[in-house]
Length: 378
Image (cartoon, rainbow, N blue to C red; front, side, top):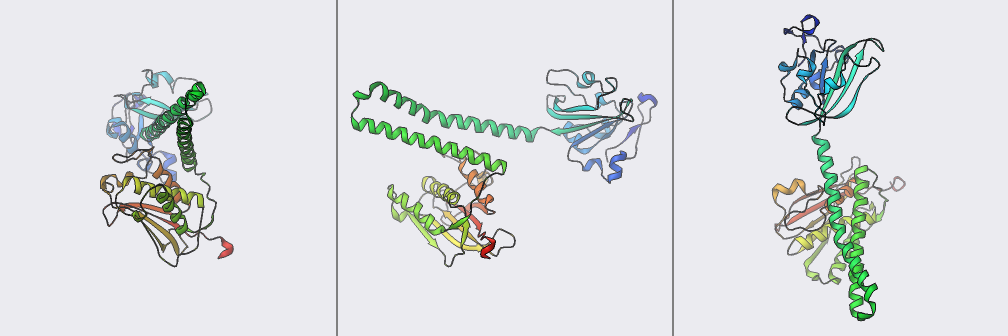
């Protein structure tokens, strides 16, 4: 346990001897090294008496090098303007009514950022400071979140710029030179505007879905769903658009349990998975629908849908990133948000989704939904 104290009177000596754990932690039976955040405690003399394992990891300072040293030496912090933090805040000599410092970004030697908050412990409200308790947190998780948000904004800006530029250009041209174009030319321009407007609408829908998934507010409106018929509709749409009918193979195992799910969101999942297989795969796109064990505890049966192709598949090293934001793989277009949304929709239903290699060598996506029948049908 990384706890110790100085035996020097007045805090000026250099000797160090082990000390009991901090009282409040002892009462709870907690070892400071078990805490997830860095914990540094200085006594009334400003000497470090506790420096736990998380603090050692975050600061790259060994507890033995910190215990017994003055707080400003053991934990040399600067604010983002380069000012020495402990001289600036003066916890021991400042206003007697202060109770601590709120969390903020500070810099360790070398420029590494760390989140720091402090509490000043006094025996009485305006008495002298008996302990300074400092909490340290690594900023890496927050940085990843900020990078993800920045990437999302950049992606949205990029994806919106192209269709909106097209819409603006064609509408401005039509308004300025309407009489100069033939009916066929006007129709072509308007069809392009219509397609670009659909693209913008889809992107906005994706952003709304991501917002609801991230905040846990994605609503699932359960109704009876004929999953085989839903897949059949998607296949018919591709055939009508020019895909050969023999490129698709639909296999439905009977009997299937009655599936209660959100039909619009199930359609969204099917649309994304089948489109990926058609666009990025090769050969036959096979869709298998089977009864399987339910992913929901307390239910015996669920419905599983597997979409596979015969293309090059997904590299093994990329398998664990397929359902993350912005994953596109090699030579993939789009926003890279589709599979992230698919996973969110499946999990909102209480289901699971996996990716692997198909028997034909291509990609294989398999999602399983609980039947989730209403209680009055049980």
